[in-house]
Image 1 (cartoon, rainbow, N blue to C red):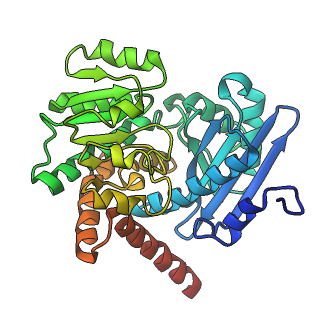
Image 2: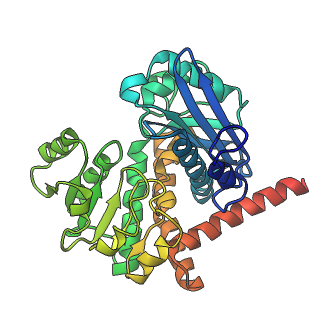
Length: 368
């Protein structure tokens, strides 16, 4: 069924009526000359201008792209709130295979659409977009971050994303085993691309045993060549999550990694990874808790990257950002403590804390 615009009715229901909705603004962008089709979703600006990356992905349908933008934007509101940033949540998706259709003309057209929002949305990199792409977008839009150092930016945000996930793992170890060290722990990483390969470096430097998988054989090959000892690879994620003796599982690719099929098969005692929207649907967090698996909320532990790109807007300082990202350790521990106190899963505890900060900011704005 469709609405009067021809869009699937379930998309509009999600936007206006469901718990996953409540977005302030959704913009559909099209530039016929360049082939651009994009969706920009602003979930909340209660804490400040919405900040979130641009995903470039070959979605099967436009409805799927809209749904992803809505979910990702909502997640950014919670991520930015938990990271202590004065930014709301937004996200953009460009529809198409970046290997096939990404051009300078398309990126410039996209930049013009972001600029048309007048600063309500600040964009950055995500899956399928890179620092060089943000340099192009920035030529048309000053509300662009994640640019190269040569163009006044902070460079690759995946460096601090991985560092934050590593701090989340340390906090999980402290909470579960009473010691933050990861030496001797067996950690499985699904996806060793922009973030995952940095995470491997942190883990190996501390002496963890690492098992990896990735759909790209070249990505796996690079990791194995760099770490001939202490790292092994398996064929796919289905195999990875069933590896015996796992302590931590780190989903670092696309969302929905924790679902009705994967959760019962997990051998790890902790899930802590960089992927966004890891919980496939409401209730998965309880399934994890029922199995005695500690879940470090994704939008908390993967906030290092957004901390970095937000700092770029005010004059980037890497050490200042790294110090902020290190606090993900304390934030994660606080969430585990709140979850225990309230008798709820950590994901629900994180949501409560984030929602309270957004509520307080909105109330203060109304009162001023």
